[in-house]
Length: 264
Ligand code: 0O2
Image 1 (cartoon, helix red, strand yellow):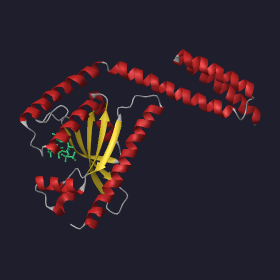
Image 2 (tube, rainbow, N blue to C red):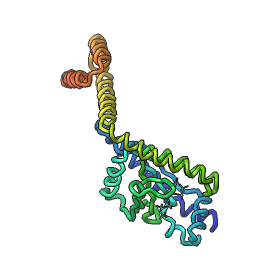
Image 3 (spheres, rainbow, N blue to C red):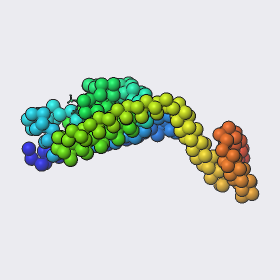
Image 4 (spheres, protein in one colour):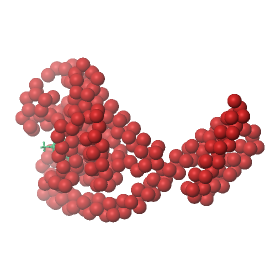
């Protein structure tokens, strides 16, 4: 196949990966802006390199002209979660979206591969607005710990050209067991970790909102009043009390509203 044709084939996948990455990143942002816990921690996307496509096609005996039809992971996104429980939440989010159609699912989280690999796989049909219609994207949903294992094992597969020596295989296998235990232990403190992260996010949103209001007040209030407000803000901020910060935000909103009304 000519290089130019490869480009034509891969371009829509590139667009699909970019669009999906933006959409999932937006979902993370939406959760955080609302002070909610996001089941998605990170999202990454990539289109396979031509050499990796050729390697996989060869391994799976796929003729070059059938690659697009038969190779389902030309493009992929990887969604990383903090906890095992989040994986199912992400799967449900994807299933319920109207801009993505799930074609296939494989649960390697509950059915670990012999290698020790764990992840939830989905093949998603996604409509990219190019001349070529919808494209299939491979999605891997896994925890941070599962991702750590898979990344290391993937590098070793590459190094040993898929023939990882037995003693390393054994180490990987016991590491895979340790990952299961680690994920289980993290799940046991999930609600505490989520509370802490939510409180942090709520505080960050409140502080951003307060500073925004103070900045707007610069155009409306006199300098002495603003200096008083700022001192009060620093005092409350140091107290590390979310309720006090909330009350201050409300009072500040009332002050800002008063100035806005005066200036009309
Ligand atoms: P790369 O370089 O990551 O793109 P199948 O086994 O075909 O019925 P499956 O497992 O859904 O179904 O598909 P496949 O093609 O075996 O694997 C798809 C991708 O999942 C792989 O892409 C890996 O990224 C990941 N994966 C699957 N099994 C393993 C594993 O044992 N170890 C690791 N580290 N990753 C795995 P590629 O093409 O292998 O590589």
